[in-house]
Image (tube, rainbow, N blue to C red; front, top):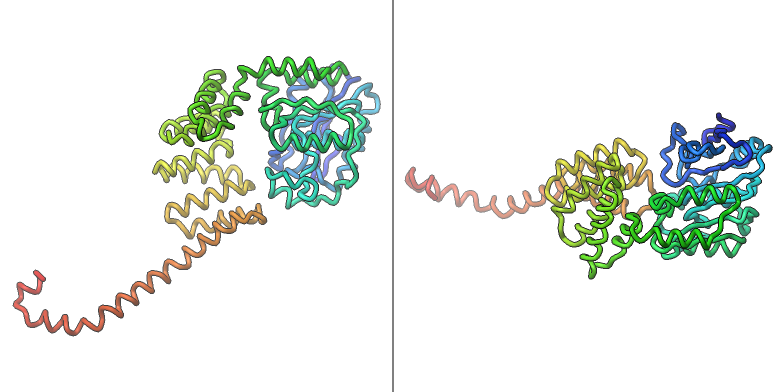
Length: 414
């Protein structure tokens, strides 16, 4: 049931068996721009009979919309009879779960791998979403410290940028942080793989969550978890390439039907110079993910490097049609067209990549290279022709006289 809709936001309400406890969820990064999709955690919560409200945004905008207050007001009005309300989100959704908990009157909050902000002025160490950070108008985000009375439970990996985000959040307010080394970003994937995600959400919802026992269960479960093994494999330096491959193979053996493990194995094999075997793992990751661009693009580049440029180009074109608003997909398509000698065709996707990510200097350098090549080739060919003519034309009369003085047979043998 829709309770609020605009061009930028959609808020839906879905009742469960218990109408006294409610969860408000926020979408994570990766939004496609369409509202024709389930909200974050919707199927997981509905299957357990939990009442929920889902907040869906138009894009990866960190909920910096002018009508965000109106959407939150509508959601809070639908929660007036609830005894307990918690907010729940991951990554960008975790940011929203903390920032908007008070506006919803929440009693609890689950934020997995949240950001303090993505505003470059506030988090200069953050580099993972540069195009979005530059594109978004952050004037709607208050400059004052975060205020959240819900005492959020934050699960995160302290060994990456998420650690600094949580440290800044903890400086502003009281929270219960649960650090899990090498859980990666977002830690939601790791928690889901270990089977501990339902316990986390449900215990916060009923108010029984205890950080220390939960962390002990996480530490025990992660030893054989494929997501954890993948992250360990990914972080091995070049000097320990064999260990990285061995860890990735263990992850594949533990979860052969998971796309992530094949992608990590492919990347480790490629770094070790085992390109042929890496192609097979790339293909598996691409197939299992349904051509997810994050896994399919490395496969396309690997195909091109192996010499199968037609197949690489066909895959890149398919991805560009499926993800027209993904700048890096357009950039790779342009690069593969350029490698195939189709410089004129490479210009269009290169321009599209810059339109989607105008601040990306790498994309601009690529377009400059394509333009120079396309414009310079005719000029270069013309210059070579002029040099040849200047060198050869003055000698042509002498050559004609020499040939004319020979016997007929000699004209064709010299």
